[in-house]
Length: 366
Ligand code: COS
Image (cartoon, rainbow, N blue to C red; front, side, top):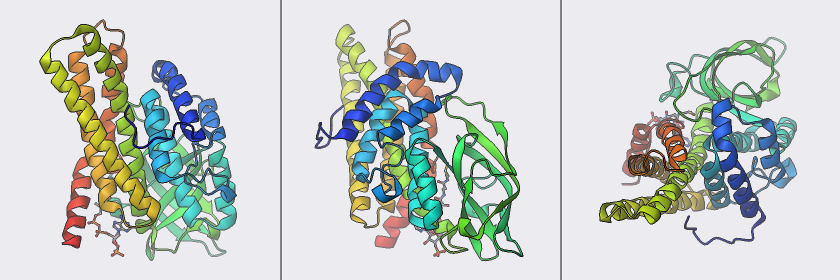
């Protein structure tokens, strides 16, 4: 993997490399059992990898956005299912740190930093690419607080989240709430049968008469859509990085095969194309990460990074799977990468949504 100005001695990098190597050994077992043990997340938490952007006073690691992206690549190169859980939890931690009531934010962020999982409950069956169409409702209660009712769809690790960020319609528009994952009234309706990321449960959740206090509201009532969009801007840097990690994993096998078998110039060219695309993707990720770090708008750059990195990594995985023959010791790994990479072009905004966002932002700046 070529690095962008790496400082090899940074503790988070040493830890992420070690976790990535261990996860690479464990990933086939995770996929077969369709589960990543909670111990894995506790160990990532102990090394500061589950709440990387959250400031230290709230229990987080307070690291730079580019460091988060690099750590995500290293973890995803080991086990992509673990990486998506780390990505979503980091995104949820950031939302909580920025918008939750201070006492709730301190409580939940310290849980996430210790390896508890954060769930992002935005999508619904008919409100995936267009979350503004959501039907889940939060009704104010006479004595204060809200009652939330509705269905949420495609919620990563929704079956074992310590805290869920839940979006719902209120009289003033879409609002956002911090809800304990085990709150009475939340149930897992279904875990989806999936092609890839099989060790990360993708859940349909029902919320029925879920009562939350006033302080569960994050930000102002009716301003939740913006919170979701801001969270997804940052999330897209994470998913772009996850895709690059998966691509790097497949690429390592392809490189080894081409080195051993010397299949010819076409394979050399494919290797060159893959390396070039992965490095270009990484540069786009760092462009977005640097803007976010500086506190300047990065919506367009995050979408460009996600669009390019996920499409590039899909190509790397497809070419590797087409090239590395059956019977090669790395074949099973490449096949897993090919299964796992597919959803990176779908979740946290499909490639079509990224093009929509990029075009919208380009038009705005014209
Ligand atoms: N940051 C902050 N605010 C944002 C924003 C961003 N990145 N993007 C949009 N907004 C705000 C706009 O400013 C606007 O606010 P006002 O109504 O106050 O003016 C509002 O959100 C609506 O924005 P806009 O009209 O530009 O939205 P569009 O309909 O053009 O696009 C898309 C909305 C499609 C971009 C959005 O629905 C989206 O990202 N969909 C994909 C959702 C997704 O990724 N789902 C996966 C969930 S996790 S698996």
